[in-house]
Image (cartoon, rainbow, N blue to C red; front, side, top):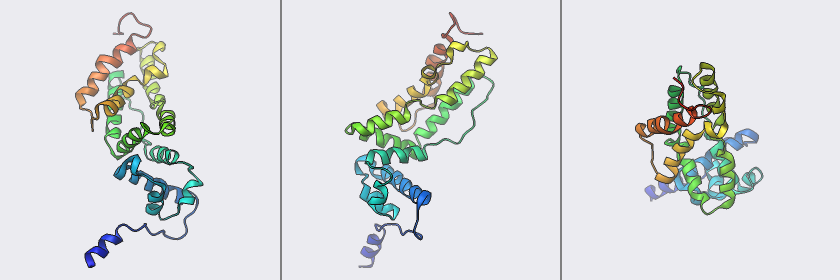
Length: 213
């Protein structure tokens, strides 16, 4: 049947354009893994399915990523990079809120879907959980520390606020909204609440008895 033939043809591996090697092949594999995670979750992502989608063989994948967990984390890490400048609104509150809004957009994007798929799979895969915790441990602390350092230079904060764990509290709380509450996207009022009711009071309390005016 023509319809059956058409449907069957859509399930075939993507044809490889020439013999890919090195970075080109790795990118094809990582993109295939990302698409499998998005469509089928971590439980449905197999090396065989990724190989078929990437137009290669499983051995090519295993040589680079010996486990499913390693491949999943690599796919997330490859496509979770945020190409954005550090915000500079002139105030700590403005910078922090802008960063949190960007993170919210990322978590609710297809990349965020990959992270949620990995988190769901991590419940039953200790290796995946360990690698995921290592990959996301700092929650982008460098960029948060940058906006805090600017606030210190403007006199909004004391240097005691410059601590990596303190700097990332806001984005960790946002991540909790996605992980434990299952929000596809946190409402903006939640972001404002995190900044105004938790983050800024915490920062102002570092080295101060009262907020800086």
